[in-house]
Amino acid sequence: MVWRTGFVFEDSNALSLLRAIRRAFVLWSRPSLWRYVQRQAMNMDFSWQVAANSYRELYQRLM
Image 1 (cartoon, rainbow, N blue to C red):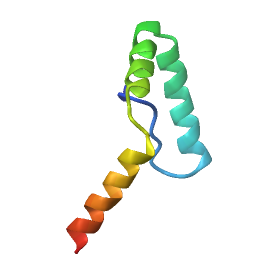
Image 2: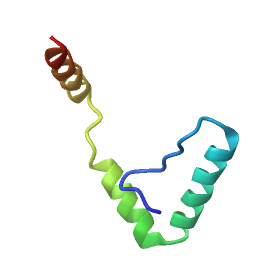
Image 3: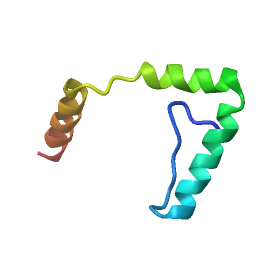
């Protein structure tokens, strides 16, 4: 399974992490898919502005 921007593991334990790492190695062995995921992740906006807007929107919904 390929994610758009990275790898997810559901449970916070060693086995789930190991499975995610294995999926990463499988993806890494396919250069075109690896580059796709890299580009998708690099195009994401992780700025404080985005985080602040998300919190503001949540606050407004709760009011």
